[in-house]
Image 1: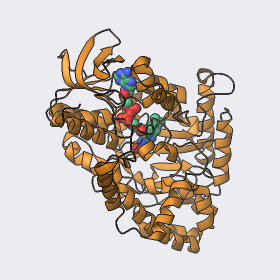
Image 2 (image 1 turned 180 degrees about the horizontal axis):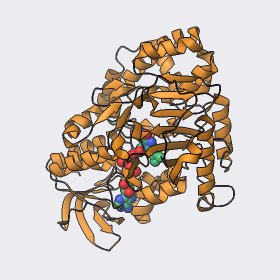
Image 3 (image 1 turned 90 degrees about the vertical axis):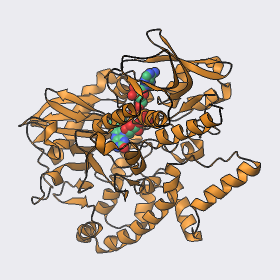
Image 4 (image 1 turned 120 degrees about the horizontal axis):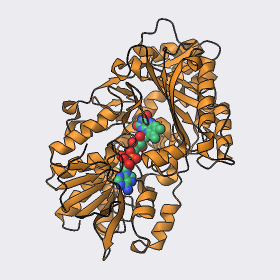
Length: 538
Ligand SMILES: Cc1cc2nc3c(=O)[nH]c(=O)nc-3n(C[C@H](O)[C@H](O)[C@H](O)COP(=O)(O)OP(=O)(O)OC[C@H]3O[C@@H](n4cnc5c(N)ncnc54)[C@H](O)[C@@H]3O)c2cc1C
């Protein structure tokens, strides 16, 4: 995918064609800026991509479920017209247990309640109360997704206007809700579940989708935040708690975004790694590619993560020392991996209810208990690869048979917790050990899997860094912990997409509101660029 007619200068150059870079480019081009996207890989998509992992078998090699893609972005870029089709995951979640039972979470709440009643009638009642409460609280946070975070540095009139903006978002919030909001933002998921639920299986069901990709076992402070994040609405229909399979894999999202950006006039060049962002007199002036060619631009928008952007692409002398230090301190450091499998048989999970249809058998999460997850994090933190891993499996070909030929099945397996820095050996030496442990774990629940693997792709944190450009393998361009969110993302003082270099902006997951396939940082960054452009400060 190469737009050959690259010119020597543009209004805006976007570094990176991840979904946020493409989103930003589409909005900038739509507003009339001549825009060029430069991607180091031969394909667009970054961590939202579909790739062939064996002849005729395609997989969402990195991200695999669309849960928070902003409905506004879907509409503005008219993604369905460019081929995007999502179907709700139903169940959204299924946790099988070794005793042969399973806990599914259906999109129909009443159906989920009936499932929980089988495990604990008291927990089923609590579920309804807590779900209502969480949905209400999530609605207060929702507007901040597509807005800049609160500007805590604003003074004078701008400060008053900012206080009014933030205050309006919380209009009507009660004292009790404030208390609960603070508890969710700062508390631990494990403590919350222990306080509210009695059945270990019900707790495990919540655990299965709430500490996803984050540092910290379920008893770490700040892990309860996931409960709110997952209830932010997503998908075309703005459903709270939406989980979607993307037909054609996650790459269909970024293919549609690239088509939209091109439709608005943007050019996209792949296999075009940027070596340096040109800065003079404190202003971004363009980029230099690794092949030495120079492209001038009035605005440079970086979709690369903050460490890669500021410690790799911008010269040391062009940034304040304090800013560079703050960027170096961003917590990234793993803690996830991915194993993508091609199987000759559909996985037969022992605990899968026999009446489930093929599409309902498309996902299962292996995470036996809170204590298990806590232990697993502790081991990874000490630099070891845990024997027992938390594995989230999606049999994508059950929903979209076009991903594999007859007789083949594609299953993607998200894995946590694993360290980026190993205590001993290197990830190149330990890659297959990780793959073996993941397949063994799956075999405990789906005994036919180990003998039916015909192809296996293991992506360690180091591979995520090398192949996809994710520094230290962090899937969110920086951990989603409270001290790295809102007005502290990527670092204090620079949470509004601008950087210490005039005309240089950050538009990726390292910026507010953070990681996941949302399109939100790309959307918000483009709005900031356009505001500055109109005021002629960009
Ligand atoms: C294994 C894994 C599983 C995940 N699962 C999910 C999931 O199921 N659901 C979900 O919502 N999210 C998931 N995520 C997270 C989500 O995919 C990311 O947070 C999100 O895609 C980041 O998007 P981005 O556009 O900000 O950055 P990226 O996708 O990282 O894109 C940045 C782009 O910039 C390019 N680039 C970097 N440096 C340069 C340079 N010097 N020159 C040119 N180009 C450059 C990179 O190659 C890349 O294409 C997962 C991520 C991973 C890795």
